[in-house]
Length: 296
Ligand SMILES: Nc1nc2c(ncn2[C@@H]2O[C@H](COP(=O)(O)OP(=O)(O)OP(=O)(O)O)[C@@H](O)[C@H]2O)c(=O)[nH]1
Ligand SMILES: [Mg+2]
Image 1 (tube, rainbow, N blue to C red):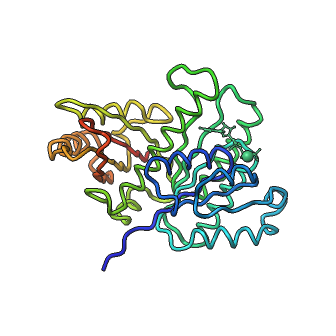
Image 2: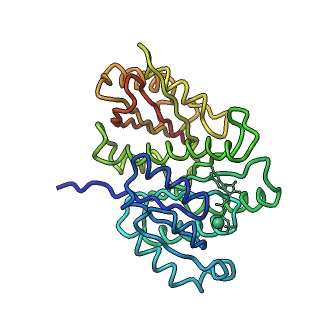
């Protein structure tokens, strides 16, 4: 019998744990969630089934000193086919700990280690930006795929609370969409081996999503997703891989699927790896949602 894929989400430090909580409120099972932080209150507020307390002074000075924590992290990750790491880069704990978790996952031989992280807002301190950038560059070699969503530039918000909330919604979609693709609850699940082909090791992924209703809803949602792609300027014609999640309610049709499939094959290079999964969410009603993960 073919066993279903095991997907675990690791929420790391302040932002990672808050965003993971939003994912749990959406559809990710708390049982598959691991919270990692040096902060007791943040861990207390998490409903993840596994909570790991870090000693910041140890992870700061020498990773080897943190052997006990590494063992805890390793035990929590063991047996996963895909892990999704979520953190706000720039914070002291999150920026260091996400590297530690990714490195443990590498040592376990987990093939899909997807980092979904934020960059600090332009309203934040320059020092945070530098620390975040260095962290992202190191993480790029530890995670197998990295989706970076800047905490900025949407809907003209100029206060951090609104900016964070709007970014949170994107991170939640990116993580829920990925797990929905490979889990058997999806109407048309994508095999984990196919995901590995589309997301080769050390790839940068741009992510976007869109929703639409009406006669051409799937196509319209797909076009919106392309316009919303993170890190701007990504051109689907240059992609080496594209992973698509189409989600709709019970009234979704083959026409919805076919219209996205057709446009993808028209626009994307013939040698690119393309994979489309279909997921169901009755809360969408007449709307269809399309999520795009694009590898350069
Ligand atoms: N989208 C989003 N980003 C956040 C949120 N909270 C913090 N951030 C971003 O993430 C960065 C790091 O914040 P935290 O995760 O709280 O930092 P930390 O790693 O816990 O840092 P220490 O507690 O100082 O060790 C911030 O500079 C913000 O850019 C949030 O709720 N949502
Ligand atoms: Mg913190």
